[in-house]
Image (cartoon, rainbow, N blue to C red; front, side, top):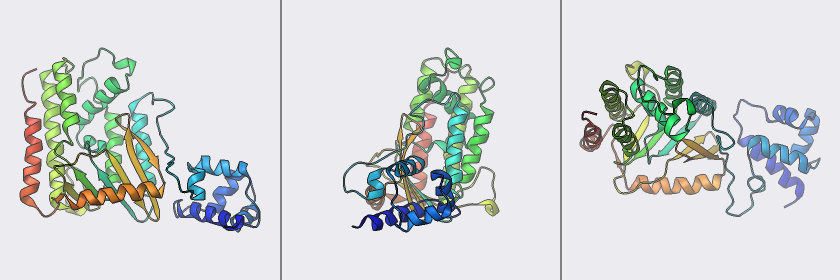
Amino acid sequence: METNELQQQIFAYLKENIPPHLSLVDELCDLLDLGADSVYRRMRGEKPITLSELKRICEHYHLSIDQLLRLQNESVLFQAPGMIEVPKKFIHYLEGMLGQFTYFNSFKTKEIRYLSKDAPFWYFYLFPELAAFKTFFWSKTINNYPELSNKLFSLKEYPFEDCFAVGQEILKLHAKIDCIELWNLESIHSTINQIAYYRDSGNFKSQEDYDAVINSFQHMLDHLQLQAEKGVKFMPGDTEVSYKAPIQFYINELILGSNTILLTLDSKRVSMVTYSVFNYLITTDERFWNKSTSTFNTLLSRSTIISQTGEKDRNRFFNTLRNKVNALRMPI
């Protein structure tokens, strides 16, 4: 392939993978400190792009040379938000995810496919009590925030109202995106284990706090079942006039995969895989997306849809989950 033809393909790839409302020429003028004419000459292949310019492009758009040159190897470049330093407060992590969903919604056509080993974290922000517990647990037990050392969970002392508010905004943006979710009977086990661990280790301040978290957990399951029944996403308390994007809800009782999000954003493909509990590795490598989507679709073909149809299977699935949560109820 001629060098100028390869260079034209590089810029065509970039144009396909930025939001449609952005001008690639304007972005490259700022990024490369060039005039529009100089950028156009590089895009047409008339002026060779320098290695320094290529490096800036790759760093800015989080791309690998392999991706741009379409080299056939098994290397995949991932972004890893949170790798350099852990946010000083959990709300900063939530604000980062809010920014991601704002970006997703900047595209005209958008769809999420979610392979759920654990329940998607944003659902824990449907109701305030469970949201407060999960925020406290992640902050204290996973991130080791020193201000929570030797502290007990209390809704009065740690309501995390700011985190709940951001979580609600994430949910509202998530509700605008078409979604296919694949769950398993074990998708809530990690949260059940976290509640049981805090109970057994004396980390709940009162019985009232403990009971409120379990009740809130049940409310979350009730809401998810109602969404599956209606086949659309909405916020608690919304009426049909407020219903948003459709959701297809599948269950697979045999396979437990990893938490994986596969996004279609117009012509752009994005894959997200969890690491370090609640962080996501992110890649725009289409080969990875294609491979992951093929596996997702294979699992889907061997799963049961319980949204809108399949009332018997839907009730059995959610009743099983509710029974697991109810088994937590006891004096602490």
